[in-house]
Image (cartoon, rainbow, N blue to C red):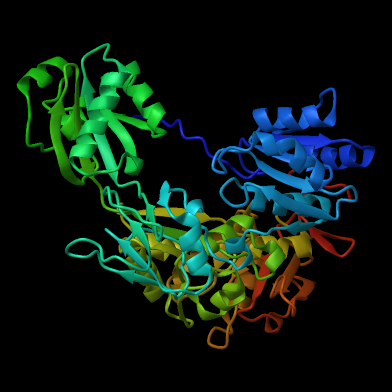
Length: 582
């Protein structure tokens, strides 16, 4: 398969190809601008004959503008240039002393609000966000990444005011959490009842009034075939006619699809570009395996598959809504595809809020359902949006949590499954992915592991090769653990021991340390970190000869140095393979 994706989207400045124009009039402003430019490779100071010209240039050439100017001056210059908040650049204004970063234009739709937060973080300023939904922690209807039609402002105000709002969706889509006054209802058997505020999630063409918002989910795939040299106008006209005849909105197109020999067909590519959707192409052999209602031997002889349009539309499953329809040089078919739920497996880090990644926070706020161990969920409840459904359980219910998270995602919801440290290290990623299948999208969000947090507190014990070992025999037989410990000891690897000791397992740690002592000098450093980054954090250093296992419990992590690890200035240090110079 090949794919082209012409979508234009706004990434946050620190994470993507976001062109940020910096405009400053004073020495202090230029100094602040240089701070941002140093942190963001795609940010640049825009110079011109005057500050007004620089601001206009940044507006027309950049995705976002950070102006170190007075708010009134920025408003006067940019007011005549304003167009559509969905396409205008985001604008943030910073005062001379860099005390405030004001999201002036393009609040949530254009990305000014998160931009103001990033600017404030870099300049040690205070972000100023006035968008109503953001201020009260509700998702904006026009920020979900889908096309939106209708009375966005009126329905958003109703949601903010706590008025009853009906959410009617053709299927369960992975929407973020919505507040309790937004009530989910099944689609009506006949025409939608009039009156009241409503949010419709549908790919169908529906009448819209001044109390209705329509969200267009990416549910439709249009298969396209053509003769060589077809004009984009013909493909576009055929596609729009087919959609209109079926009562379907082009705003819900997920992609155009075709056979791979059409990947360079300019008329098809130009149509995809104009619609703002990717073009996906498949080998003829794969399309020929798709069961279609209208195969053609003529098409098989030409391109190697008996169907292009219908087979491409149905390649990933779905239901054919528009059978093959043709013009002089093109064919089109349209299939509806079921929603794909979303499972984010989120590592929360070792405990401290400042060691939690921004990506983890984003995923928590994007989720409608959060699943996790009760004590970990409690750490992040303040980050969850109103209306988030929480499925928390106690110790020992890992498999139940994994099954629940996958089941919720399979039902179409946006789910965050949380764990401490990194979710892939002795945590929830492995059990969850044992149950997940191709019907859901899975996103892994890495976190700072307990081992990394402990190593930072101990010094630099993992500067060379190291190994993670769990001493819990709950899921692994003890003889297997013993063999792995012996191999790590013989290989002279620094060992990070998870689950080192508990009330029920009070002898294993001493046995493991004896194994390491048989292969390493008695002065080899051993470190223990308990509750790394949490209020009751403790660090203990000893050697293989002096270490007392009784100081360890399940909240600790033990680090056993290699034969090269030394104590330097009270810190564990393992050299990076160079000759030690003590």
